[in-house]
Image 1 (cartoon, rainbow, N blue to C red):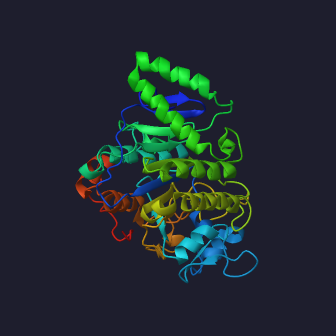
Image 2 (image 1 turned 135 degrees about the horizontal axis):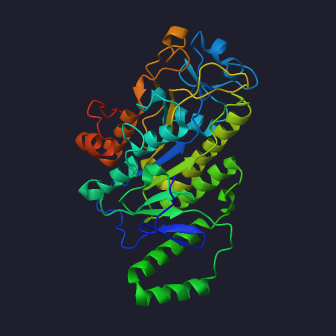
Image 3 (image 1 turned 120 degrees about the vertical axis):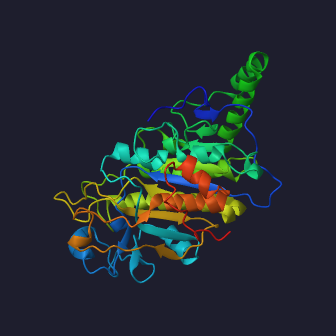
Length: 401
């Protein structure tokens, strides 16, 4: 993944920030939607995150990684057929409150098993890898409806902007630094210097510093490179939510969480995967807690590049697969449902006799959110955001507002 570029971003005091003259969110409309996209890199095991407890072949295939209806680590009940990994208690509560839903047995059109290529297709929105350096979310931001064009910049969280939010639309980036932040006196003098030579850059500097101060109201050291991946999830969400909660803050955010490649000692209901799911769940809780009133108009989409094998390998993990599960959460979600055209787990029903078969196109889900939450037309989504997808209709009924 390429780093932030000078064209779009400015690095100051441990944060990376957007170029100047960025428009603000339109205040004329009563609607003020927030959209958060979380990419789980490494391919999440959807069968151990959301277990098909009612499938008679589930336990035999997924063995020690399968969730169960009872016992010390019983799955959280969903709809009688599916159960949720117990590590996701916040999501389970939101599901019960009809503010979260799951889309299972879903995938992009990508059918190989390369992380790099799968992530490229998921985040670029293109029909195959290597076609563009821009992401579908950035292209969506670039062409929001007229009433929403005067918005705050989108936010990319991390040292490297997720591909999904790279492109021509300017973005605000944030990541804390390992070095102590520069003092206010130095930064003030630097801003004054830019005032004389480059007013636009001076304005970008001020906006960046303001965002950095807002984020640093709490302890934001957990996102340092090489730190604990679970704490990084919590910290990234906390910082993003603080920025998004502001009246003039970003309304659209992208984050990428690493570490979901569970070839070895995955754990299922306990262990590594459950720990990762707990970190994701904590991130969702941070958004809910910090966004305040804005939560009611928020949609969080969580997706991964592909799933994992239905069979457990010799290292108590699962290898690269095909279909997985996606999560939607937020006050604007019409939740309390698992959306699935369940393909079954018999050998004949598996993709290439090894993977959960995809029956829902993940791009239809993403299109449905963009259409109903941000007001983008189906034609534009098929032509520019997800090119070549005229046959993939936006999924309806995902949102309540």
